[in-house]
Picture 1: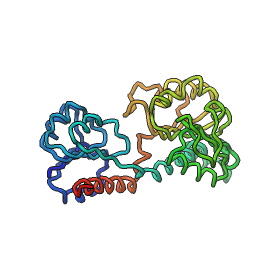
Picture 2: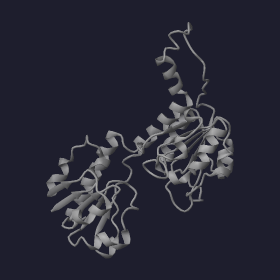
Picture 3: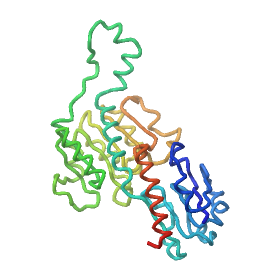
Picture 4: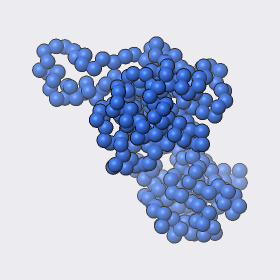
Length: 311
């Protein structure tokens, strides 16, 4: 069989892809532009892709294609209906990134909540060396214990964040984005109540018709002073222009691992803040610990094995 990996850069350069070679000829492309996709998959039987779009037109033009392995959980880049009509199997990988995303959630929280950028800069610029005091308390910070942590989206990742937050002594509540409360271990609140009463708010929800633009100007103003908002879900859940305005208007903090457009455009209001220290943005890396990417590759291999063995 011929296997084509369309966007290997999304898996990182440190993974050993040789486990895929036992299934046949493996052709690897670092990236694939939309106008390159057809030519690259026209004689492939298995295609592996993370973000390359495979629409109906492309699928119809690949007569040998039998299996699409999505190197992710989300499947929105593949026309699933067309694939089914054409007899093409589509498999994704679920659950591989949970420990990585949870860890990154807390990394962002600690960076913002403990003002680590400020204190690191204070030392490295020489201010501590010349200060004459063993400590420096220029930016007070608070403990997680005793604070209310509101979670938007209580799925697998949200539940693990809740478990660890509770271990730190937080009072955990959540907003069910489906509209149905399904987690008895924590109180379910309406969104406005959650935003008003939470010191920390983290988002772990998919982007859909219920979550698109969920937090706009009207909602963000409800956040309490010095609240920390973390988005580890999808960028379109927060209106970025409204968030930028609110960050400059008063002292709240935000950590974003996802943005509405990725990569973030140079003219984004998030890059023009008067108070940039109130915002932490990472380039969609929460899912991507080395261990998570290895689990993802193992999941792809398993999907191919099951397909080849007729399961």
